[in-house]
Length: 213
Ligand code: 0O2
Image (tube, rainbow, N blue to C red):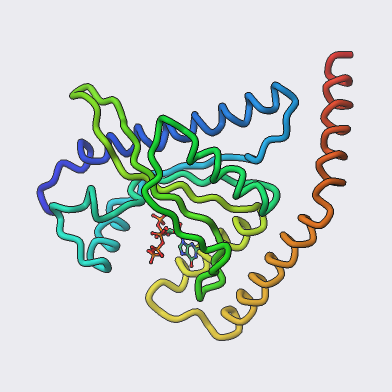
């Protein structure tokens, strides 16, 4: 270890991930409560593991004194949505917010990564209120459809399994085909979006009637 008090260092990032999760979960609940369409399906969040922070710092050549500015995803949340169009809606909502500032974006939806990975990343600056006063921390918001998330979760676990060694060719080729299939799935769902949203609305109305009775 490098003598750093990691617990103290990571605390504002934990607070940031928690607060961001709550804010977007609340946004979903509020929209549902008003019987409006929610571009948010579910939200997850995490603080990067110390080993991942160190690995990324090494990869990006970031010194130990510059972790706060050099590693932008120490705190991160993921917002999953049903349709690709929801990503743009969420993007606009995030830009409009006064409690966070968008620094820049990485569009891996329009420009998928070589691995086949697709998601929209937004790097924000978030003012977190600590016992020592306000501290601005960097955080990453990943926006993805359910299909993109399915693919990324599977690919992440396969890469974890094979770690240093290369993915076997067959697995790599199948993963690439699966990425294509997820892309087509998103397109097909977008084509019948209106129909799906209407059906879900009817279903929710019916379910709430059943619950009341
Ligand atoms: P953790 O701690 O496990 O969540 P990179 O070169 O990927 O490190 P890049 O391209 O600048 O960095 O991406 P960025 O915006 O820093 O985001 C990195 C995070 O995006 C990753 O976190 C993943 O959550 C996700 N990601 C990026 N590329 C891929 C990919 O090819 N497959 C999958 N499944 N996820 C990806 P970490 O690094 O996994 O950190």
